[in-house]
Amino acid sequence: MKSLHIQNFFDLSDFAHKALFEACEYPWEAISAIKEYLNSLSLGKIDVEIPKGAFLENPELISIGEGTAVEPGAFIKGPCVVGKGCSIRQGAYIRGNVVVGDHCVVGHATEAKNTVFLNGAQAGHFAYLGDCILGNHVNLGAGTKCANLKLDNGTVVLSVDGESVDTGLRKFGAVIGDFVQIGCNAVTNPGTIIGPRSRWYPCVNHGGIVPPNSIVKPAQKSQVVSINDVTQTKK
Image (cartoon, rainbow, N blue to C red; front, side):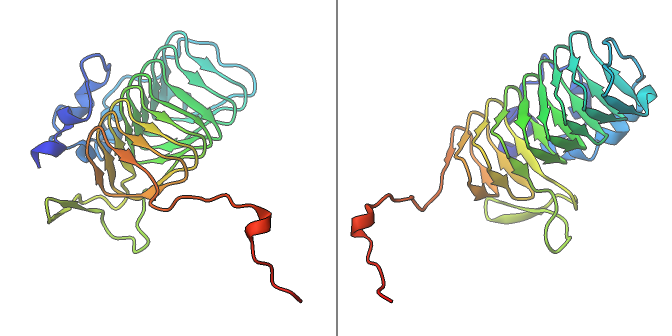
């Protein structure tokens, strides 16, 4: 289980909210601590102008740092904290219990709830992030979906070195380590854990534990053939 310790996934030295992780040994433990952590903060400090057409629900429970751009059409529900120099784009849907570090992107039609963005994490287009942690400088391709609920509604169980480890979480999306790149329209299964500096090909549906510096790619390759090579059935 040492390979799954938090320090093996994230560099927290420059993260303003590193205290969220202090009592946690494994990263998924921080997912269940997000709400309590936000409730411990003095929120309601908004250091940017909110444009007409952007909607803040419970603004007294929302803090937004200097230099962050909130575009018209964005929806932010507290409790939530957004750091400095971020981009909250048109159509972004932040559903509450979200911690966003500095220089992050929550893009068009991206939905996030009970999720942490470390510094520089980007989910620019059409992503779903439920009960997730995105490491520093993670980039999610358009349409990335991090599923967070098993079809049987049971708790998420990890397979670690041949043993089953029950996280105790009914909703657990993905833990994505620093500098991971995920291609467009990828889907991670509930409880996916991706080691730092890994790459995940577009349109791949996968789950489980991915070691650092790995490539997740489809087993089946597409093929292009000439129309003349295709046998046509005569009517």
